[in-house]
Image (cartoon, rainbow, N blue to C red; front, top):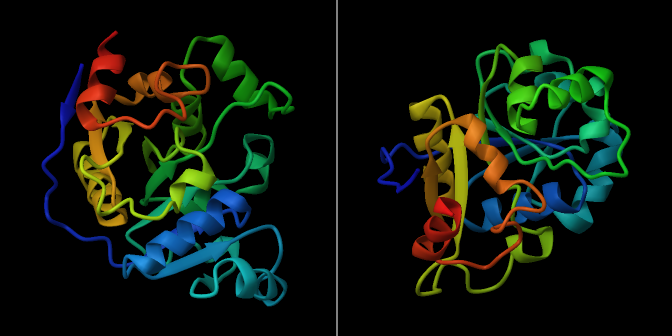
Length: 220
């Protein structure tokens, strides 16, 4: 089951992004365009990352990965799943963690990730089990980084819809508010397990759909 979303009206004042690749910097750009300050962290230290950001996300602030959750409303996880062992789960304790990652067949995943997938869990449920002190929301994974910062997303009628899934209603609403601020129409799924419907190979993955179109495909 899916629903349209009426957000709580709570605006995310600042976000953190883990990952400064194409997807992470694209999100940083559109957040800045929407008036949302961004902290961003990667494997490189801030003093090295800042030169990369000058070209690809000049308004983002480079921080250490250990401090990515400091002073932000939520953190968006945008690193390859094969690199998840590089992240200390303790640094994300108590935060809304938006899982924007995807499972790609060529990636060599950590053992704990492979084991979780073999039990039938969605990739986000496996991530939630590993980062067990965070409140995980699946979102921003079924849109390409090229489309993420596409021109005219806010003026489109209807707006492009993006799905999100979580077991935490308040965190889902917070994430939905972020999607709205970025120029998208959020569609909330019932549970984090339903995030499997947003994964690569699904009917909605990388499809440009209105909210009604997205709901229709998800219900199939």
